[in-house]
Image (cartoon, rainbow, N blue to C red; front, side):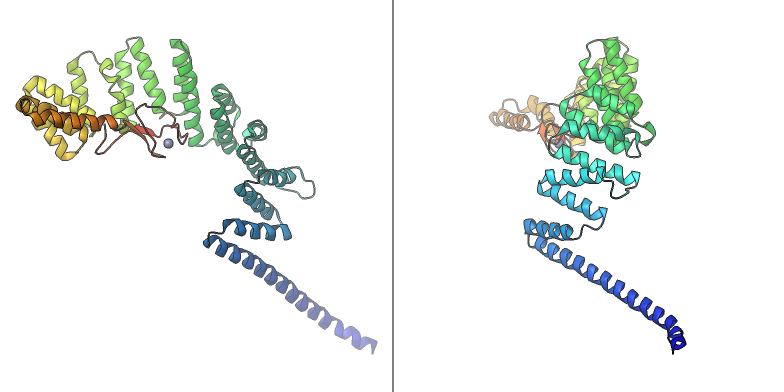
Length: 384
Ligand SMILES: [Zn+2]
């Protein structure tokens, strides 16, 4: 009898294994169902724009099933989104300090970045800085440096930003980081009051970001101080090669780059013909030159041709100005001219490409959205 029982043992093992597999599968299915239910009900609440209750439901779900790190991280993100930063900090700090679970280094650094984000959201800049600084030499150097640069731009500590950049692993830094650092160097250059220090800072800005329009322009202006017109002109041309949209902003320094009016006009001609510059300021200046050399009729034809290709209020105002000679005695002419002038005065010169902020004063950082180099000369019908 006992032998018979032994004979049944393999069958019992197989039965146990099959049942165990079924039970594990059932457990997994139940877990999946719970997740699906939680997600489905949260999504329908979100669709019904009941964001608050949707968050509460998800948070409740994660609270009940804190089985893995991803759940904790999602929970912390939800808390941060809800504005409950202290809870997000508690979760992230708990994960960073825990010795209950072994978190791989790369993931641990990601949690530290999230923790720094919590501190930033809470306005705790110093704690964010202390969390990010050790990460400058990690695989997350780029993200850490970006975070630090955003802190230092708030406090206007340009030198501290540059020092963080120098401490970071240069190989790992993104293009975005380099662009930002070049603005930091330019801010340092702008604050200096002697030629040598300014030049050094702008050159460093250019070294960090070869395409930095700001440092090229700053250097171009600097070369004019020492009367190196050729070098200044070369840099202006480089800027236009990279950023033709900056053309109207360059016209205030361009005349000084040239030896005489003829050279300046030749440059203007090159911009229009070779670089296809649409700026009405350039075409207006060219019109003035044509009027001077070949008379009003030729100037009028030129600006009309330009207006047909690129209609603009300022171009139209130029045409009206040329018509003055023929219609000066007409009482309606003055009225028309003053209406156009008033319209132009009400229009801004620059616009932020990122947030749409408009201004008459150019700045390298948008005061509304805080983005760098997004303010550009206005283009289109009201363009300059
Ligand atoms: Zn903006």
